[in-house]
Image (cartoon, rainbow, N blue to C red; front, side):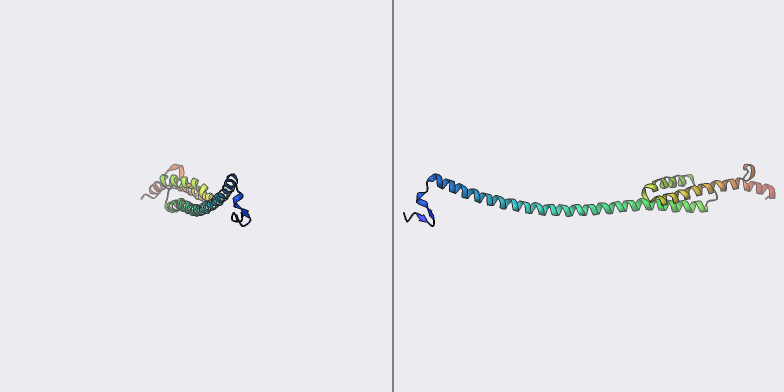
Length: 160
């Protein structure tokens, strides 16, 4: 039986059951190695996909932040423009500011408390209150004593 041995294994002494068990073990080992290799390959691909998804998410977050800042700028700038129009109208008007502009600026002042720090809201509120008070005072001055208009009193007194 010297021809049946190959190395330390005597192949001639193997039964079919022993050979089938050995072959099944070898095939199980090979299948296990292939399964681990396939799992590593899938894990590597999933990691690459996850990395790309993370990059996309970060870009989307930056884009959303930029859009939010742009929206905030637009809203704040609208309030700034209304404040500018209102202040110019209040300083140039002999009477109270036009009711439509005053209502629009009043609404903008109310919105400003959500868009600016509280100090900005207080300043805009002071501007609105001061302009309203000045308009009322100008009307009172024009009305003159006993509610008569100042220009009417001047015409009657000086006979223009």
